[in-house]
Length: 147
Ligand SMILES: Nc1ncnc2c1ncn2[C@@H]1O[C@H](COP(=O)(O)OP(=O)(O)OP(=O)(O)O)[C@@H](O)[C@H]1O
Ligand SMILES: [Mg+2]
Image 1 (cartoon, rainbow, N blue to C red):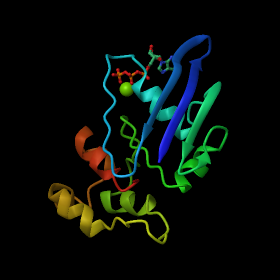
Image 2: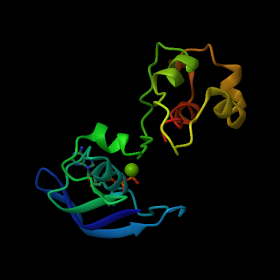
Image 3: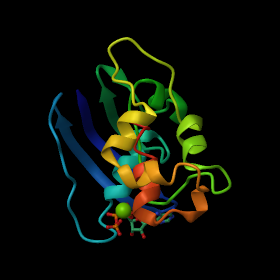
């Protein structure tokens, strides 16, 4: 489903990902483990094309992702939950969820506010609170709808 082959990514002259290759099948749950600074976030950013790999191939369901703009990668169905908060601090929790709503697509499970609030009841209680009032963990729950 997702296949990286010989990926090399840099920040300036710093060579971070060196010939990285792995593949993930549909239905697999995969964790990337490594010491701080090992390149886990850079790997995910390279998949999303937030970092542009200098060489190598990244294919998702047959589509080559390298050199696609990030929004096209997202449209192909890859979600990215950044470790930073990245929510709109002056919008309410409900409004933040609405902003991230993706158009309905055939065969793609659709998050609704109700489903998310069932999973995270403490967000439901605070749906009218502004984003800036959320803890770090809660703000990441709020971003989970970007699957
Ligand atoms: N924007 C950047 N500019 C320059 N160097 C960067 C940048 N982001 C990360 N790095 C460097 O790239 C290397 C890999 O960083 P990365 O964030 O991918 O690590 P990580 O495995 O996610 O670490 P952590 O466990 O701390 O989250 C580190 O040496 C880091 O200092
Ligand atoms: Mg990281």
